[in-house]
Amino acid sequence: MTMPAEKPMTLLSTRFEPLLLRHATNPILSSKDWPYPINSVFNAGATMLADGTTLLLCRVEDRRGLSHLCAARSRNGVDGWQIDGEPTLMPDPKNYPEEIWGIEDPRITFVPELQQYVVTYTSYSRGGPGVSLALTKDFRTFERYGVIMSPDDKDSALLPRRIDGCWALIHRPMTPLGSHMWISYSPDLRYWGRHRLMLEARRGAWWDANKIGLSPPPIETSRGWLVFYHGVRHTPSGCLYRLGLALFALENPEKCLLRGDSWIFGPEASYERHGDVDDVVFPCGYTMDADGDTLNIYYGAADCAIALARASVRSLLDWLDANGSCERRQRAQDL
Ligand code: BMA
Image 1 (cartoon, rainbow, N blue to C red):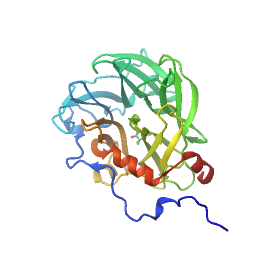
Image 2: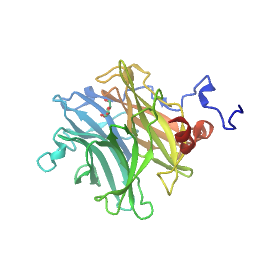
Image 3: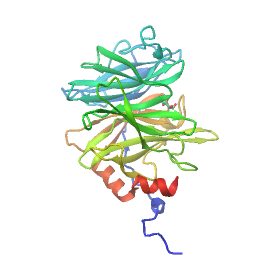
Image 4: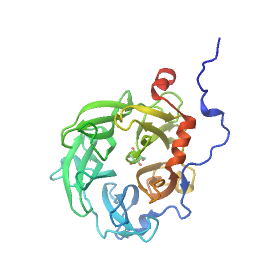
């Protein structure tokens, strides 16, 4: 039998050069920093405001187990956080019944056309988690659009510009056949359609088998949309949340150009390995430094704290060039 001409899988490399570097002072925010009593703070959306301030919109879990969102601002994105004295965005189940059990895991996209930030978040309804959307100019007042993707659905973010005249939203519906990343389109941010499968969870023993989801909003590069996604591995002692990398076509974001085989970041530090939920790294936001290359990735650690890791876009793309392959080929061969 002749060997396939294609490059063999990348498992042959024995050493992995870390692509995401943990900040020395991690975790950078935890419940002890909060100005009011909470259980935990984790999974924060992130953005850099016009004046250079880093804003984190943090998921805060109260001592009932329900989550709300609270803004923290810092000049350097590392310390000196000014945290809102009370919740910034509370669930409003009277007007939005889908928020009855809290709001979670925000992703922030600044949309130049609207001159506003679009926040997508999980609204935890009696019927399960759905995707809700709100607009804000200042993270003080919000215009809620309500639930835009019905349960079970989460892990969503908006692309910052229209694709072919329509807004594009990545999200993760859950089905008994698996939880995959989808993309949907809308003329007005309210009505969504043209649903397309964007990235499939693999199967079997893979680290990203059965359940994946978007992590921070996609990063627009000259080569395509760079996407961090999380893969959930179910093990006899619980779940393992790790991060993978993929690249999608700029004007056709449902087309995967490259996908890495191995995870690039996983729970290793003690604050990632042990917490309310062990073995979770869960980024929901990033900011980009003025050099246009350095990413500051903010991630929830073990559902207990917020940590920071830095990465270079150039290195991430180089890694994908060396280790990624075309999704279609993978689908045919590996699934
Ligand atoms: C996911 C989400 C995240 C959480 C993770 C681990 O399903 O709920 O908010 O960090 O589980 O508990």
